[in-house]
Image (tube, rainbow, N blue to C red; front, side, top):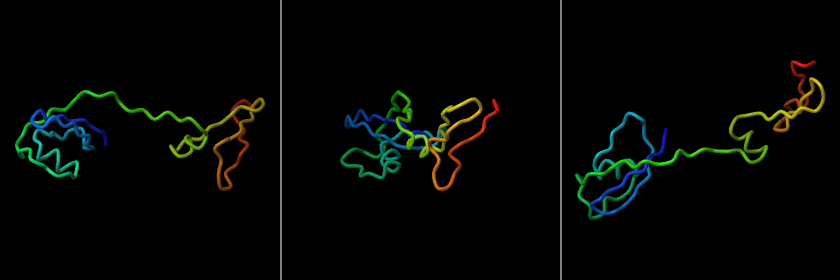
Length: 100
């Protein structure tokens, strides 16, 4: 599910919550319920606005990052021979490719 940022003009607070794309959040009470936080002194029916935000992208920086994200990283070693540098637990390290 995507993360969304909301702003409440009544209390000048910004809150980040996760919810489905089709769900509408229009009040502070709904937002606090989703974020599992206390309402504080802000009225339940105070309006909130969804803010525009930059999408968060995960960029793998190591071989372990590739593996934890569910990918395999193959490095060409010779014609038709690739090494799976993310191989673990008995997975084959050398893979023959279509060049062979």
